[in-house]
Length: 187
Image 1 (tube, helix red, strand yellow):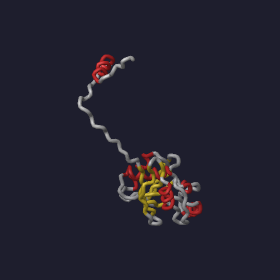
Image 2 (tube, rainbow, N blue to C red):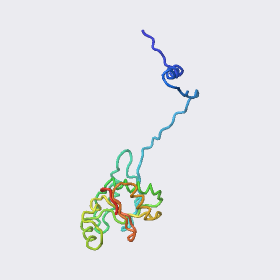
Image 3 (cartoon, helix red, strand yellow):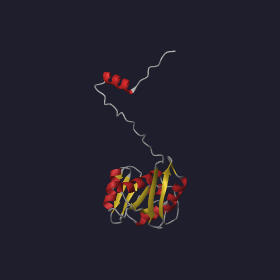
């Protein structure tokens, strides 16, 4: 049976020193093991629908997936406040809202002025309000008009623009910022 040579730390350093310009020796005392976090990463969001007054503060993503009950609850609270129609909300929009709130370091829930918008509501707004798109991303659950009460509106806009995650519209006279997950554009 052939003997197997045992590579000790001393032999390793000597061998490395022969092939490298130099080696920094490791401390001779043992290092404690570093405990890695065992809790999975979670994403949470807090927002209030200003039309209905409903407040939602929940974890919507955990264990590597979006939580179906939370996803349904988000859609329900972001429903069309005029028709009560519920529509799914794009996960990218929910992530964008959570990242925006986190980047703003706000302790307050986001105030949702308008989330999902039914085609009927969108058409009514187009007829009565300037600047409402006929193919609004609100109708696909991919846009939200919002404000964050503990941050100036212009700052919310600036942070949203810097995120480069989609469209950002600034409506200071109506006191909200529009964010969506469509193409990057600003108005």
